Image (cartoon, rainbow, N blue to C red; front, side, top):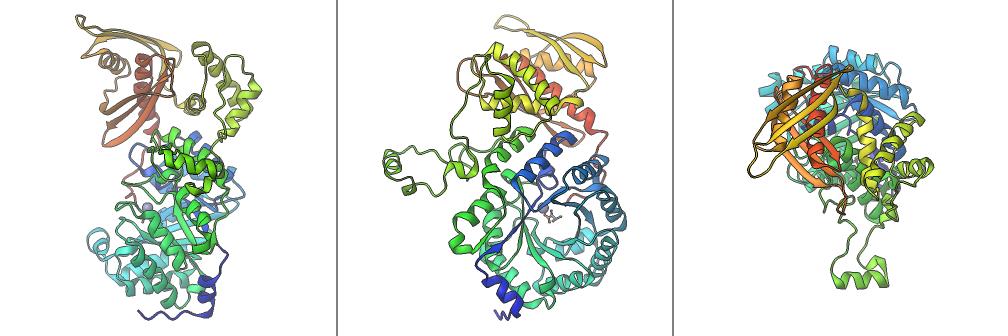
Length: 527
Ligand code: KIV
Ligand code: ZN
C-alpha cells in the first residue's frame, strides 16, 4: 500500500499526546436499541451525566424522526451550554431544516448530516448513482452550513464502500464545509487491521484532509466495535463515536467506557487520551442501565459486576501482595464506590441526597423531596436500603409525569386448587376504575384485569423476575418486554411484593406506550 502523508497529517499521527474527541450517541443511536426509548426527563438526566463525564459532543437525537426527538434535541441544547450538541439529519433539506430549528437555541450546535455510500446502499436503498450521491451530500453539507458553522458528515456504510469512492466523497464534503467527516462501520463488518488501514488511506489520499477531523463510528455485530475504533485511533482518527454500555442498534455501538479506559490504560501504545472524567463511568453505566432496563452483563469489560472480582485463590494471593499482579485498572478509577453504604429508616434527607449524588444523580430539591418520601416508605418495609434500591426509586420518580394510569391497589389469589383471580384498581385523571379477571396464573390474571381497564392488550414477549439485592427482604424487580404495533417497549416494576412488582411493570409499559404515541417516530428511515 502506498501511503504518502502530508506534513500536517504526519505530525497528527506521530503526536504522542493526542486528545481524542468523544462523541456520545447514547441518546440517538443508543436509543435506537429495541425497547430503549427514553422520555424527555430521562434524556435530560442522561445528558447531565454526559456533561459530568465531560464528553466533547452529545448527539441528542434525530429531530425529523419524531416530535419527541425534536423536543429532546431542543431541550438538551437549551440546558447544556458548555458541550457541543449534535442533531442528526439525512442529506435532505427537510431533515436539515428540522435539525437547524431544534438546535436554534444551542450555544454550540452541530448538524450531523449523513448519506449512504456503499454499492449495496446506493443500488437498493437510495437507487442513485455515485455522482448523484456526491451531489446530494455536498448540497446537504452546504445547506447545513446555512444554520451552523460546525457540520459533521457521515458516509453511512463507509466500511463497505469502495476506497477510491470514499476518497472522492470525503474530499467533496470537506470542500463543501464539513469540519468533521465520519467513516462509520454501520453494519459491524470491519476487521481492526483493515479498518485502521482504511483510515490511514484516507489520511494519505484525501488532499484537503488537514481541514477536518476524521471520526469513527463502529457497530458491534461481530463483537469488534471497540477494537475497530481503537485501530482507527492508532491510524490517526481524532474522534470516536460511542455509547454508554455499548447500547445501540442490533448488537450495539462501541462502548464508551471500553474506549476511554483502553486509551488511558494503554497510553504507552496509543499516545492518545480523552478528556473524560473516568470516575463518572460507573455511575453513568448504572444510570443508563436503570433507565433503559438493559442490564449490563456480569462479565462486561470495565463496568460489569465481575470486572474487578477475583475468585481464584492464586489471584487473591497475588492481589494481596500487589494489586497490579492481576489488576490493570482500579475500581476507583472508574468511580466504583469504595464501600456499599447501606441506608435505613433512620437515615436523614441529607445522607440520602449525598448517596444519590455519589451514585451520579443530579436531582432538583423538588425531585429529592419526592424520592425521599418514597425512600422512607421503602425503609419502613425493608431494613436495609441499598444503592440498587435508591437507583430504582430515582428511576421510577424520573418516569413520573408520564404516568397516565396510576396503580391504586392490586390483589390476587392463586394456588394448586384455585382459579387464579386478580382485582386491580387504577386511577386516571382522578377517576378510579376497578375490574377483576381470571388467568393462567396470578400474573396473567393481573395483566388481564389491567388490559380490561386500560383497553390496551399488550403482546408480552419477555418477563423476568429477579431480586434487586441480596437478602430475604429484597425488592423483586420485574422487567418485561412488550410489542405494540411493531415497536418494542421495555418496562420494569419494583416492590417488596412480586405480584405488585408484576402489576407495576405492566402498567409502566402501558404508560410508556400511551405517552410514546405523541412522540411516535415517523416513517423516517433509522440509520
Ligand atoms: O451507523 C451509522 O452509520 C450511523 C450514522 C448515522 C452515523 O448511525
Ligand atoms: Zn450507528
